[in-house]
Image (cartoon, rainbow, N blue to C red; front, side, top):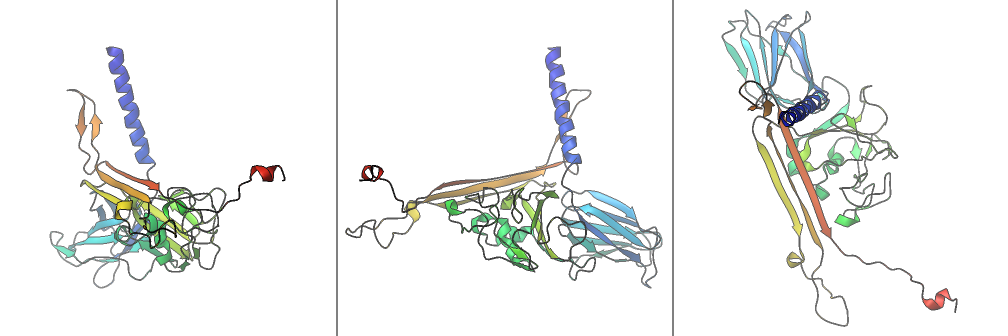
Length: 369
C-alpha cells in the first residue's frame, strides 16, 4: 500500500513539474505598452507607479517611470488591459479599456493631474492604436472577431492574409486541395491534399517578393516548411487563433530568414471565465440539388450530387484548478488569476467522387498484336 501511495505521489509530482515546466516555456509574446508620464504642463514625472492588468486573467504587472518619465511593459499577450498610473501629489489616472494587438508595441502617454491620490481620473473610451508611432513597419493585426466572422474558404485563417496591406494573393494554394474542393496549383510545398495537411496555405506575395519568401510563426515558434519557403507545416483552426499579425515590409532586425511577409499567429488562451464554442459544416446528398443532366444522356432521371462532407469541432477554456498536497490530504486550488487552460479540435470527414480519363493496356496490346 505504501508503495502504491509513493508511486501515486511521484506521478502527481511529475505531473505538477511538467505543468510548471509548460508554464515556464509558454508562448513568447512580443507585444508591449510604453509611454511617458508627464504633468499638465508637460514636465516629466519620475518615480510614478504604473500598473498594467489583463482584464481577462487579472494578471497584473507593475513598473516605475524612469528619470526621463518613461515606462515600458513587454512580453504581453494580445487582449484588453487596464493601465493605472499614480504618484503622491497627483490624481490616480486609469485607462480601463486599453487594446493591445498581437506582436506590436502600443504607445500610450499618461498625463497626471495635480490633486490627491484618493481622487481618480478614469478614461473610459477604448484606447486603441491608430497611427503607428513606435516603429516604421507596414503591418496589420487580424483580430479574434475577424478570424471568427470573416469568410474563409475551408475555415483556413491564412485566407485572411490577402486582406492585409502590401500583400497580394490569387487564392491558389501551395499544395493540393482537391479532397475538400479547394483551389489547387503547383507551388512551394505541393504535397498536401487538404487544409488539414501541411504546406497547403494560400500563396501570397508581400512587398514584391516571391511566394516562397514568407516566414510563418505560431506563438513565436517557426513553423516554416523545412524544404520550401512560403509555406507552413501547421495550419491552425479558427477556434485556436486569437490574433494574426502580418508585417509586409520595413520590419526590424528581430525578423529574419525570409524577406517576404512575416506571419505571426497568436493562439487563444484560457481566462477567468469558462468559454467555448461548437461548429458544424455539413453537405449531404439529401440536401443537394439535382444535376441538370443524368449520368446517361440517353436516359432521363437526373441525380443529386453524391458528395458527403462534414467539418466539425469546437473549443473550451477557463481557469485550471491545481492539486495541493499537505496536511488533511490532497485537495485542489482554484485556478482563477493563477492558471488557465484552452483546448480546441477540428475534424473533417469527406466522401467525394470524381472522374478521370486513363489508358489501360489490353491483353492484345501487351502481346503487341
